[in-house]
Length: 260
Image (cartoon, rainbow, N blue to C red; front, top):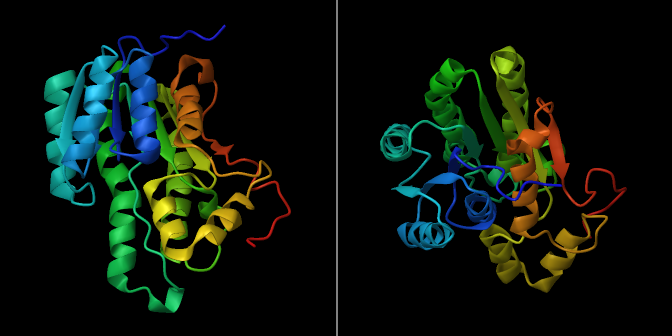
């Protein structure tokens, strides 16, 4: 039987926790007993998520700012450490998606995408790892994407950043596994996030159908379904799982599919 309070006493930092997968993850882990450090860009979203976490009895602290900025990552880490203590679990989730054909993407587009999707996690992990290593235990869950394994038109910057997340996550597992650190990436499918809804609003309902067609399970994925996979990997139930690219993708990478 699954322990409904798997994270009692754990301190968890979640980036991009204002909406989508990050929000669902913060709420899921708070419901299971964790103290939550919310790091996100939108102050109103941050307050809303924090209020819901507190309603479940969780200790919460908010750090609001641009995680693509190295200085803010350091400030956010310091703020959360002072309020909650060092992280037992880090969820590197924050991401942006700049969609355009490759020849229309600028250096600035790639730099912004990598600053948020990849370097925010690198910088924050660099800050949390020393305390984890001193304790001899820690969990890193890095939200990647099936687009990090294969891509489609218009997603070259995003896909490249998520491929970097996957490779880096495996390297962390190799480098620190003998010292008590587990590192895994999670590969969602097409999730009903704000990014997805903006695409549907821009392109019409045919975009929803195309995205759903990526999956064997013929619908879009809910953020809570990704949060469930993240919670599993973060928990003691996954104590012998590390270095994986965990596919919570509705069968996207198994399906002989087309993006129709």
